Length: 170
Image 1: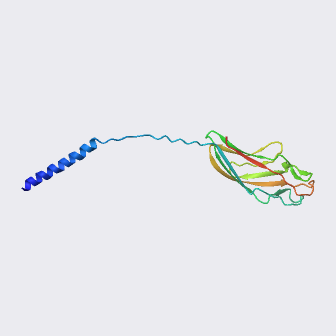
Image 2 (image 1 turned 45 degrees about the vertical axis):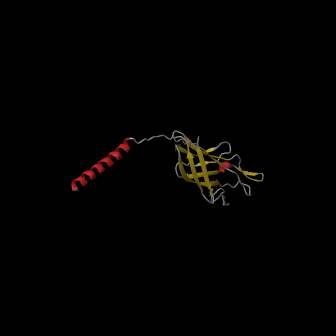
Image 3 (image 1 turned 180 degrees about the horizontal axis):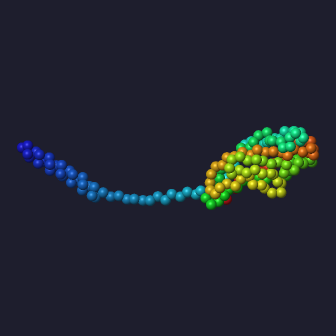
């Protein structure tokens, strides 16, 4: 009886295995593909802080170039093609004015720290380069420090001018 029981157990195990294998042999499957598209456009974001600077009064005899009260931190974020360079320009359409009195805007210059930002002098006739960024995308941080050429010929007053920075990512 023990042998018959072993034989029945063996037949049951073999039959179960055959049933499992036969089910796998008749399994069905189906595959599909998914296409993923993304549109990445050119972008330019510019942050200047602070957005107002001031030059204190000083004697032109002792201080020929007056430093602005604060440096201007610049963050430029650009997204462009890998073979395309973004640019930052600085423009002022007018001189410093106080009523009818003026100080030439070219009396204002700046130094720069942090690549690829560059130093320059304001010019009301044409925009000046503030930076030319390497080809491709990235985030760039730098600082501009401004200076006003001090001169005895300036009339007294509170002078102001607006300067426009334009970041372009073609």
